[in-house]
Length: 152
Image 1 (cartoon, one colour):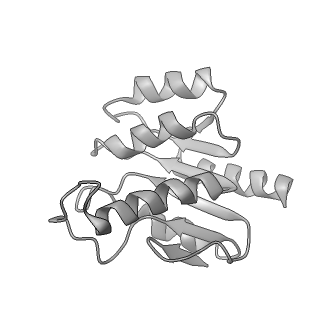
Image 2 (cartoon, rainbow, N blue to C red):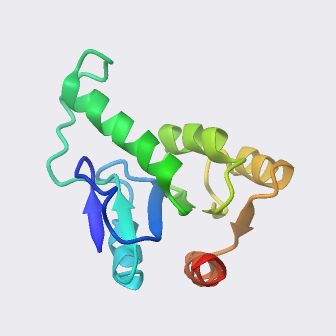
C-alpha cells in the first residue's frame, strides 16, 4: 500500500518504508512508483504528491508547506526502513539534509550513483555512520527486502 503526503498512515499495516530522495519535479524520474509497486505488501510512505504547488511559499507560517515538511519528518522517524535515492541530474538539498538527520537511524539504505554532485559527501557520511550504501537501484530493492525479512 502506498500512502502519499500528507495523508494519515499511522494506523496502516507495518512495516513502514519511507522514500527519501530526489524528486525535483521535471528532473528526477518517478522512482518512487517503482518502489511502491515492488513493496505493495508493505506501507510505502511517499512524500511525492500529485497536488504539490511549487508556488507555495516555503515558510513555517505557510500551513501547506509546514504540513508537508512535518509529515516527512514524522514519517521518517516512524519508518522501519528509509530508502534514500539520489539522482545524478539533481541537487536534492532536502535529501542531503535528511541524510544528515537520519544517518544514525537503524534501517537506512542509500543509493548514490556516480555523477551526483555531492557523492563524496554522501559516501563519507555513509561510511562514518555505517549506513549501507548500494551501487545500483536494483541492489537497493534487494537489500531492502532482506532487511525487512530480518525485522518482520
